[in-house]
Length: 355
Image (cartoon, rainbow, N blue to C red; front, top):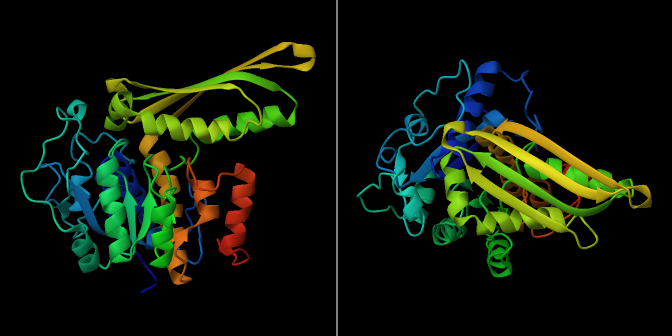
């Protein structure tokens, strides 16, 4: 048996569903199928080496069920990959702490389990987890930090997939470095999503001397994440705004926005608008659209973040993995252009860079 990556997951929602379906798809397809994967081999690990060993949620329809069944349970509505069937995984979803994870606007969609939450640190140790992936809803600041602290105490690598600024917290990242716990965050940058396309447009305009005056990005979908974003999307707005403003070397109006449209389910539409000045101050406008299955777009990046965490563990590294954060996350501790981040990540994977 080859190497495996023992993964624990927080939040059995659409992102988890897309991730698990994708792992099943690539296992069935065999090692020759690499379409949709950024790194078929990442530090000696394939996507199919990822093995879920623990999961946490608070919904009564998911807690106590096998992870394969729970990830397809309402209110999840992620795209179902044709021909993919999830076999039982032998991983029972455990009750996690609620804290601020269920705001008023989500209570109509969530059936809160009445049981007591487990000791997360103990559960991670008993599962012998190596990496913890955080997929909690945006705005779950207390809950996210509870799991981050548990990962630290259990000695488990932490991937922060949501826009709570945990990895960017100097005190937390310093403790993680001391405990040899690798960190990747904050807020997963979709495999090919609104942020990376918007950033590419900005780079193209800057390289061609176009002066950007204002730009906005509107994202809308029908999953619970977007319902949540409409009501408490401040942290997501911050990470998206800074992902764009960090690219523009002068003042420009930048505005991201969100809308919830129920019958779109997990299908996301992103609209980009740019108002700029061309040669001689002549006006230039860009109005573009992207449509994508939202959660699969998350999973395509998450599989690289998970494997980077395991590679860091193999190398005895703890704390912030700068190159991985910059390439895979919207709000990394050390932001940089995507091309530079990609080059640094490749150098790190080849062992030519420490972080």
